[in-house]
Length: 243
Ligand SMILES: [Zn+2]
Ligand SMILES: [Zn+2]
Image 1: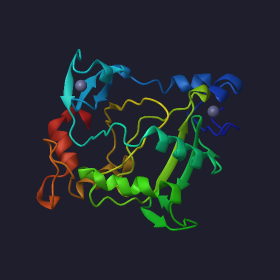
Image 2 (image 1 turned 90 degrees about the horizontal axis):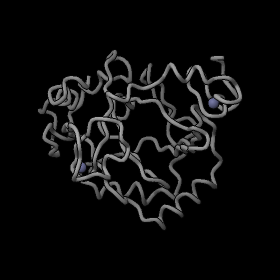
Image 3 (image 1 turned 180 degrees about the vertical axis):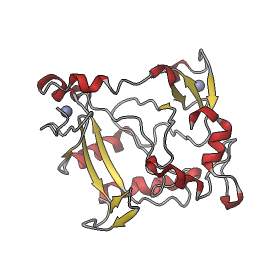
Image 4 (image 1 turned 90 degrees about the vertical axis):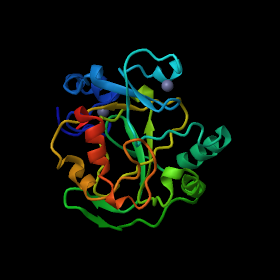
């Protein structure tokens, strides 16, 4: 049952289609998250609130429970207008989608990356689509994203009717460095986080020691950040249980 299924899922990754039609229901249970150890980020007070209530930010400023500081996360609400969003979605949907795991569909633009071998080859990559150029340019309007450089751009579709999801993960620290950007469209979104306690080789996490942080532990933006302790160190001291 861990072999690839027609829906695109492999191994313990599942979606509603393989859970209901290919008997993958049991595989899913093995991945059940310990949601009691999660945090939900509030974009209004910039704190991570303990728990797994995806509406936690809607309670602002009347949060209940415990929160922690979590410097290095920045959420810009309404980064694009609804009209821009409609145009963007029309353009994205004109490009063929590839099926992916866990009920997702994707479109990838960028070089081919081998995270384990730390190799990048340009391959067939011919550049980013013109319809998203203004978005990449708008990133520069965010202080944290000054001198940010897009290496890869992906469109990811999460359709609730397919049970689409993604496992908690850390994006590769070798190639993507300190900053990773998500533009969420078509629905309200909450940022949730859960602690990773594992091998530093996973996600090339140890590489985060090799470059300077973009923000300091108090959330201020660093310039010429080489002398400062790395973000990984800052996170460790701010939040020992997170790593
Ligand atoms: Zn599936
Ligand atoms: Zn809040």
